[in-house]
Structure formats: C-alpha cells, structure tokens
Image (tube, rainbow over all chains, first blue to last red; front, top):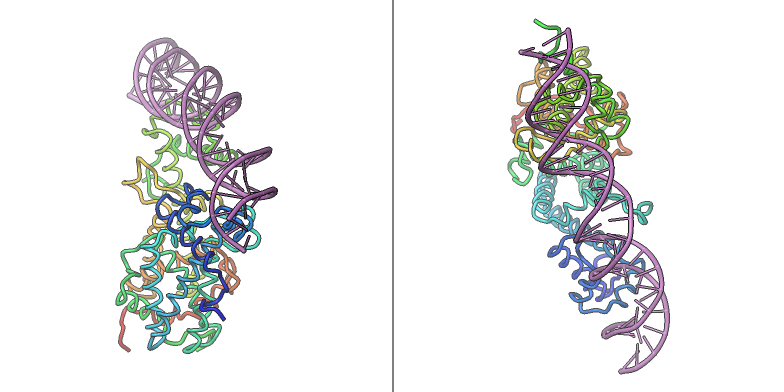
Length: 199
Length: 199
DNA sequence: CGTGAGACAAAAACGTGCCTAACGTCTCAG
DNA sequence: CTGAGACGTTAGGCACGTTTTTGTCTCACG
C-alpha cells in the first residue's frame, strides 16, 4: 500500500542507500567506510546495522540491487513509449548504452567479482545484468513477437550492449539511435525472428 | 621462401616461445621468471634478451601474438572446409568456443589488462581478439555475402562468442554445432544480411 | 660474429612486525 | 525504536630489511 514500486522499503533504508551511493561516487567503492555512510545519512551506526544485518557486504549488495532496479525501471519506461519492435529495441539499447557510459556504478556491476558470502545466493556480474534484462524486457517485446523469440533477442542484444560498451567499435555507435536502427535492420533482427529453421 | 605461415621467425625464437608457454601452463602467468624460461628453453639469458629486446613485457606479448596466430590459423582451416555460410559461421563459433573453454592462455587474452609500455602500440583484450577475428574471417565470409555484411556479422558473432564464453546461457550452447545452427537460423543471420534498410 | 656463462646494479616482490582504522556487537539512555 | 558510544576483534596500511628478479654489460669461446 506504500508508494514504492515493488518493495516495501522504509524511508531510512532509502536514506542509507542514497548515502552509500553518494559516498561511493566521492571516494570510490573500496575507500568508503561505514562511518562515512553514518555521517552522510544522518542515521546512527546501530540503525544501519539493524536495517542491513550482515553489515558492509549486505549493504553494498542492497545498493547494487536498487541501482539495477532503477536502471531497469528507466528502461521499462523508455520501452513503453515505443511504437514498434525496432523502436523498442533501439530505444532500450541507446538508453542502456548511455547510462552505462555515464554511470560508473552501473558499469561496475559488470565487472563485479563473485562475493564470498553472497556468492551462492545472488548471481553477479554480466550474467546478472543479462538475466535481469531478459526478465524485464522480454514481456515488453512479447507484444510484437513470440515469447521464445523475445527472450532470445533480448538476451543477445543485452550481451551486445555490454560488449560494445566495454569495447566500442568503429562499425556501430550504440549510443546513437540512427546507428542502432541501421544496425538492427542490417541484421534482420526485426523482420521475423522465429525459431523455425526451414523456409 | 620459408615454410612458416607469415613471419620469418628463427628456430630459437620458437624455442623461447614454447618454453614460455610451457612455463605459464605450469606456474601461472605471474609466477614465471625469465630464469625459468632460460632453464626450459636451454638457451642462455643473453640470447633471450637479444631475441626479445624489451624483456619480459615484449616476450610475453610475442607469445600472446603467436598464440592468437595459431588459434586463428586453426579457425581459418576449419572455415575452409565449410559448405555454406551457415556452416562456415557455425564451425568457427563452435571451434572458437571449444578452444576458449579448454585453453586457459587463450581465455586470458580476453581479460588482459592494458600493458603500460605497449599500451599504445598493441590493442589488447577483447578489442584485439575481435579485431583479429574480423580481419581473418571476413575475407572467408565474403565468398557468400558482401564485404560490409561479412564484417558486421563476424564482429557481432565474435563478440557473442566471447560473451557466451564468459557468461554461458541456458538458451544456447556455443560449443554444440546443432545448437549454434539453430541459433543462427533463428536470428536470420544467414538469409540476407544486407546493409539496405528499405525492402 | 654470434652464443653461453656469469657478474652486476637497479628494481620489484616478499615477509614481518607494528599500528591505526574499520568492523560488527553490545549496552544503555532518551 | 533510535542515537550515542564503548568495546573486542579483525583487517588494511606502512616502514623495514631481505630476497628475487630483472635487464645490461663484459668476456671467453668457437
């Protein structure tokens, strides 16, 4: 019944995560201490540990999750304004690429190494991002194509976004809408991506 | 006039490179010392430094280059036996994926960080591999499609091979020929990859 | 001439102890 | 239920001496 999108998260929780995010932007991931976050958030040390039992690891992980959530929320919003499949895909690719380029935190998620404690619970790095992308975007693409096709396309394009971000090419500019459209068209991504083999 | 593929490389040079490769397999990239290579190769310290002026960095870089050369030579061989475009691409994808999976050295090339001294001269990591792939494979694909299309397809598929290697998916198995064929067909990679937009 | 053997200084890697800073838990007052 | 802070424990940095390793140079040998 709250106003939040999917989680019932306390006001304080958000304050802590905001502070964490801000601290990381300033000092860098490794240099941030809990006390920094205490100072920034205005909350007490005890509260933080109550909100995020498990301490530093859990707190940072929670921040990453939230960061991904807002990112994909943006993506979902962008996708809903799309007119056709090509527009949908191109918009998402461009937005995602631009966000990655200007948001270090987001980019870090791609290189995130396996956490010791949480390693078994949460997927990390590239697989996580690809997984979330397919989960969020596949339903939207299903308006135009089959479930299987949507899943395949979203996964492949997610991987390409990551790849072109990490190692840009002279062929395509994924931050440019027209370039992306041309790219998609050249590959017949839009025409009839079906699982059928014969023609 | 020699029997080598592209470089006139001395017999000793190969011995050093072989020894280097062997040492790395045994001890790991970081643990290998020049003296280890001296012992293994049977050549003297002085000779090694004469063959590879610049020392460790240059030597290791040379080994990487050679490793990539034999890899792409294998790929070229595999490609030449192909019957059509789909077969060509699938064969290359499968072979490349399998080689990556079983050859640690090759995989390391993808994660190779920018060398300080040679950073400006040689491209490294993912971009290098993608670049070499396009250079080697594009000519072969041109038998079936246009130059531009070949270039695009090879680049994209190279990136996907790397991506699926680093973060495997449940959707596709790039080490399985049938799975790859199905994948390619599903995406219309083969039908008519053209740069034209209108239809 | 080219190669191997080895000496050599400079630089990097290593081990060690110490110390400060940070962590996570706890208690207690408001 | 929160903030303030004490507290034991742990982890990260730093200074240090030592050992390896590196890269160059010399010289004897064929």
